[in-house]
Structure formats: structure tokens, C-alpha cells
Length: 100
Image (tube, rainbow, N blue to C red; front, top):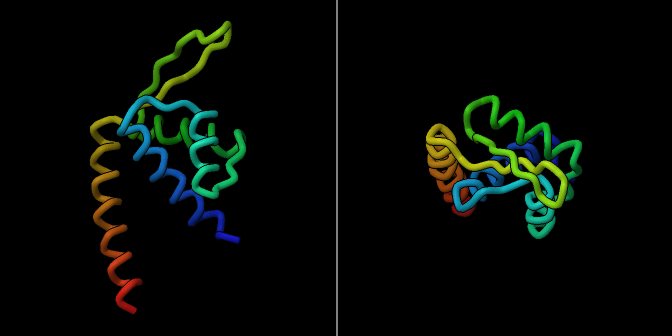
């Protein structure tokens, strides 16, 4: 089982990546991550989304969807920067691991 701290780092990068492509929302990301083999509960997902927004990496808007308020998130310019830096670090790490 993947250590929770590592797991959460991967999840945050996945979220930023998908939010850079189009607006996202919590349940959508839970299902998307399930396709990648992650089991993420709402109790994990929503605090991460709120945290990424509070840190300035995501911004949100609310919309009424069938009588319920849904929060949509998209990446900010700071989020784009951290995603770019993460991508570079991930590529560097992959090269090191593969060469071994």
C-alpha cells in the first residue's frame, strides 16, 4: 500500500493536471482517479481541493446543477507554475529510476 503522504502528492498533481485541461469538480475527480487505480473518498478529495484553492493553485466558481450547488475548479497561473515545475521534477525522477 502506498504511503499516504506520497499518495496525496500524486493526487494533488493529478488534480492540477486535469484542472489545467478543463474545469473539474470533486465527484468527477474521484471517478477519474479511480480510472488510474486510486481509491479516493470525498473526505479526502474535498479537503485537497479546498487546500489547493486556499494555496492559490485553483480557483472555483459555483453553479446550480439539478438543484444542488456544484463547485467547479480550474487552475490558476500559480497552479500552472507548480504543475510545470512538478512535471520537470517527475521527468527527472523517472530518468533516474529507469536508468538504475
